[in-house]
Every structure is written in structure tokens, then in C-alpha cells.
Image 1 (cartoon, each protein chain N blue to C red):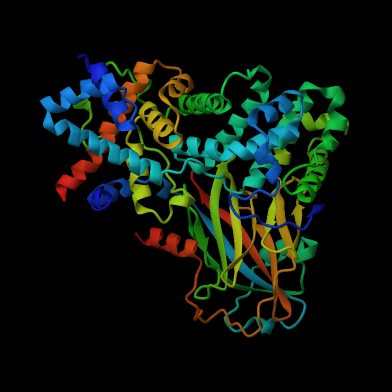
Image 2 (cartoon, rainbow over the protein chains, first blue to last red):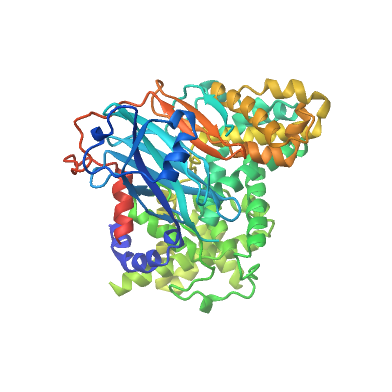
Amino acid sequence: MKFLVLISASALLIADLFAQDPGMEPIGSLGVELFYATNDDVKLAGDQAQEVAKDQVKALKAIKELSFSHYRRLGGDRPTILRGYESWATPLKPSKEILVSFQPIKREGPGKMQMVLEYWQSKRKVFSTNPFLTKGKSLYLLGPEWRKGRLILAVKILNLKD
Amino acid sequence: MNFLRWTTSKSVMAPIGASPDAGSSDQEIPDLELIKACQGGDSRAFESLVTRHRGKVYAMVQNMIKNEADAWDLSQEVFLKVWKALPKFEARAKFSTWLYRITHNVVYDWLRKRKIDGAGELDDGVLNQSDIAAGARTSPAYQARPDEALQNSELGSKINRALATLNTEHRETIVLREVQGLDYKEIAKVMECSLGTVMSRLYYARKKLQSLLSDEKGTN
Amino acid sequence: MKKEQTEELFVKWVDGRLNNEEQSQLDELFAADPELEAELTGAKEVTAVLQSEIPKSVEPPYPDFFNSQLMRKVDLEIAAQRPAEKAARWWESLRWAWAPVGALALVLAFFAGQRMSPQGNGGLADRGTADSSEKSEELPNVYFAEKSLTAEVIADADGNVSAIVVEGITAISDDIDFARADRTTSLPARYLQSEERRLQ
């Protein structure tokens, strides 16, 4: 009974303390884009798929494993990076077939940060990694097969507070 | 463009809390035996010691600084210091107290460098009851992140935030006593203060927490 | 009675640590101030809540990675103290939680360290330099949910990781049209919590 009183008594305290939660401070934003890459007919990507910029194509082709004949952009997301909490990117919204969770681990000088990235597919975690990301530089994750091609995630820190 | 490539072997994600290396045999080997092996240069024994105690250290650090990213680094620093200091550890001492003492020093060094604790060392002789106003913050803001174990506990989050209103010394004293279960003398050793100071800090910390919660009760 | 003495009595009462004499002293105080016992009972409740809600032990995220990273630092520490034995010690370090991953990462980190420290003589002693050890810390680990997966990490000439190629991921059905919303409602709990937090 006493515990129930304690629980019910703390509600107002919570509202105030939560509002001041420094972990919720935005410290930057992350760009997560999803590309379809194929050596087959690029129309398989569907009507919603967009053309990919030339410099992006060049960057992808520079890496042997990511080099394909054709690319299309399927979607992207630009979620905020919170100082102390995990956040999620939904690059294929409205579909949640592919999700990417991310959370800062530590800063490593200006414009560089180590993060935990988790790749989720069909609501299940597939793999996680803890790379150092540099602002403005993409990290590519070659993912699953789909419609005679492969999906490629490009993760990049867009903004980062000093 | 030249690229460096390397391939990782197949690897299985372990759930948080599980460690493939912690075999049942580790549970039977007392700390002192592992320490003796470490003192002989056996770093495998040291890893067993780390696996056994990392949860306590991480919890302690996180309760002190409420910042998961730094808690990770500081916990690593604690164990690295432990490794370096193990040759000096005397068997008659209690390992966990010694470990908490190192944790205390690492956290306080970090706080001093970060100047987070702007109030500096608390002079308990000066603090009196009138300073314990309900809802008053006695320490600067910290970076909070709910621990995964508490994600489903609203009360746990509330208590964490109430703890955050205590200054560093009070928070550490309360956590060492109520959470880690150290007795008064052990706390005095860890925090390098007198027994009287421990009692005084416990008294005021409890009073402060109680004041915060009962104030809301009165409002309702 | 001095203030410090009464504070000590109160603390010990909450912890159930009073001896008979101290209990008698406190009983006198209770008799003189009837509200005192209720107040101290409140402190007991706070203690109980702290003990039930704050965990004594919390595993760090990715605990095996925690160990492997720490042990790498320990090995560097050992290497720094005993250069002559460094070579043998280094290759003995194959005991980390996920030994194949740890060992391979170690070997490749070594080579990566060599590439990034061209001034070195290429010997094991190079691994002890701050520069190469910092670079080796930047190699990501990849953790899989299933044993059938493998990953290749690709870095550019500056040592920045450019890509992670994961093989063995279940193919996405060709029927899935990403332009349409999923009908499934069972999203990961952490995702839902994050959304809830974001929308507050």
C-alpha cells in the first residue's frame, strides 16, 4: 500500500525531471539512405524509385563489392541524433521492413563519433556494428537481395554539434 | 583507390548480460585465487575477474555520472587501473571494497576534469536542514539515460531522477549503501572520509530523497 | 544529545543496526516526538524503493566487446612494460570472448596499424605506439544474430571504414512493395519506446 502511495505521489516530480533530461538533447542528425543496386533491369525497383546522383554513383562504384550497373534510390530518413538515447531511422517509410537503430557511444574529436548501428529487417535485428563515423562521409552497408539486385544502406552524419 | 579489406569470422550475438567466456568453473574460483593468478601475470584470470565484476562497476559508474557513453570508457579505465594496481593488492583486504575505491577515484578524477560538479567538495559541516528544500537541485545537470533494466519501471526512472538532485558525495554514499550494500566502514574506506561523515551524508541524502517524494505526495 | 549522534541513530535505525543501548536512546526520542518515528519510517520506504528499483549490477552494452576492448588495452600495457616478451605474449592473446573474431580483428588491426604507421619498422613494437593503437581502436566489430552471416569491412586508404559487406542476410521477398505501409503491428519494443520518447 505504501509503495502505491509513493508511485502515485511521484507523478508531478516526473514531469519536471523529464523535461530537464539532458539525454534528450539533440546533438546532430543522421542521414540514412537506401539504394537498390542491380546488374539487371533497374525498373524492377518500382516506379517510386528515384535516380541517383552521379557523384553518389561514382562513390558506390569505387568500392568493388558495391559496384553494379544500375542504381536507384528507394528512400531515406534524417533522424535526429540524441545525446543519450537510441533513435531509429526508417529509410523506407511508410514501410518498416528495414529499420536502422543508432546511438552515440563516444565523440572522437570534431565531426567524428563512434556509434552503435543496428540493422533490422522484418522486425528482427540482423546485425549490429560500432563504427566511427565522420561527418559528411558515408558508411555503406551492403544488405539483402531484393528483386534481382541488392539493397545498400548509406549512413552519414549530416550535422554534429561541437 | 586502394582499399584494405578484412573479413570477420562468423559470430553470434550474445544477449546482453551473457558472456560465452564465463564458464561455470569461473563461479567456483574465489576472487583471491584469481587475483593471485593475475599477480603472477595471468591475464586470462584477469578477464574472469572482469567478467565477474564489470556489472557492479558499470552500475556504480552509471549511477554516479548517468552518461552511458562515458560510463563505458570510465568502467574500462577502472579495470585498467585495477590491472596496474593488482601487484599492490593485499590479500587481507576485501577485493570489492578496493574495486569500489578505484571506481570512486576514477569517477572523481573525471568529474574534476569535466568540472561537472561545480559545487566542489561538499563540506558536510556547513550543510544544514534548511538547505534541503524540496525539489532543490544540489548538483548540476547530468546526462541521463534509463538503464535497460529499468525501461519498464516508471518508478525506477523517478528514483533515478530524484537521485540526480543529490550532489555527488550524497549520491555516491546512498548508492554504495542502499544499492551496493556496503557497510558504513567500507563506504568510509571507498570515499576516504570518516565514519561520521558517512553517517551524516546518509542521513541528509535519505532526508532529501524523502522530502522530494513526500512533497509530491502532499501536492496530490 | 549532539546532532551527529542523533543522525547516527536515525541512520542505524533505518538500517536495523541499532544495539540495545542505541535502541533505548531512540525510544526516548520517539517518546518525546511522536512524529519522528513516522518520519523515519518514510526514510525506510525510500531505502526499500532504492533497493528494489536500482540494480546492483548492470552489464555494459555488448559485454563481450567490452572485455575484448579492455583486454586489448591490457595487452598493450603488458607489451609496454615488457618489450622482450611482447612477441610471444601477443600471439597468446587468443582467448577473448569470441576468439575467432577477436583474433582475426587483432591480426588485421595489427596490419592496419602498420599501414597507418608507415614510419614504423613493421615489427611488433609498432603496435605499442599511441597512433597505431588509436587507429586499431577504430576498427568496427560486427555482431550477428545468426551464425550463417559473415561480414567484410572495407576501409579507404586513410583507414576510414567505407563499407561493411554482410553476406547471408535473408533476401527480402520480391513481392514486398516498400511504397505501401506494413500491415504488421508487431514493431520492436525499443522502436516503439523511441517513438514515444520522440513524440513527447
